[in-house]
Length: 204
View 1 (cartoon, one colour):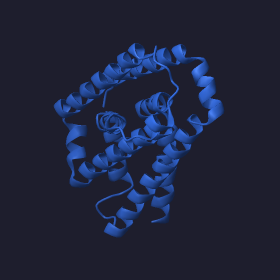
View 2 (cartoon, helix red, strand yellow):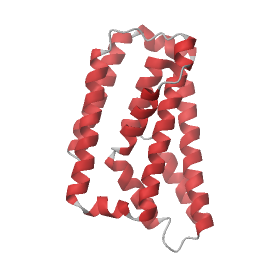
View 3 (spheres, one colour):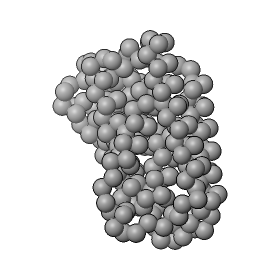
């Protein structure tokens, strides 16, 4: 179990810090809506991770990895959603990035849903967890050990997003981003569209 634990910690951390669609959408929403928006988006991403874990446990992840049709549907749906968010970023770049405390603290389902949908439709997420559940967490792994390893993955991801959002929402960082407001909108839009095209061209 110790070996499995170290492997889980290592690969989860590396995947968390690697730039991708989840990081871009959390960054964009934190800049646009403040700390609360970033945390809600992160919670959506974590909830999406639980969906991936859930279907890998029951074996549907194998179907996604082996079925060209299932993989293609997931891939193109994810790509279309990323491109849509990118176009939205381009159109919203004229709006101010300054957010009042009342707005930033108010619950907004949009933030959560964007993180959740973005993560669930990311085919790389499906393939990552499928790899974990075939090479690290195997059918021979006990229920207690499986729960522990899954909990460790979730805790590492949650800690990373909390640190990431808190750093982005730091006053000095926010002032720097607000200073280049229009360029920021274009950068996020370009990144999201580029990631969408990359996902569309992804092969298993």
